[in-house]
Length: 175
Image: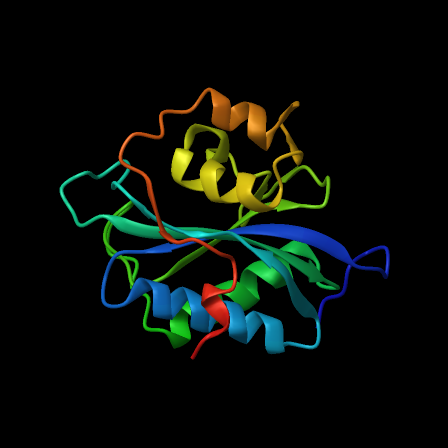
């Protein structure tokens, strides 16, 4: 286990999405798996949203949500945990921005800024994506990203076509 360099806990924000199979069930399962780990604890989960596809638009709408996770892991180790959950859920990476059963992105990790071959923090395109900003604003509207709050980024975003599917943040707890 790779633990946080300061030996303490950090709060990471995660973006979850999918548009194949039963994405809400897949995202709920992924969040429960993270929450069961000794090195992670889910602190908050946004409402569940239905969102139009982004980047590659000739596909089904997505379901999206965000979560805050307290972790003792380093960012790359948290990414490995998320990728392992994706693999367990049969995620296939066939095309960029293409259809998927589950996608888990690390959006922020405390106030850390880094750019490695494996992970860039904060997520390089999160401020351009209303399907990230809207659910993240549910749980962390004052989170500072690239010099502005998530709420301020959201106020400038095009949210056309995004709708709430589950109106509270407990949707992931139900099996």
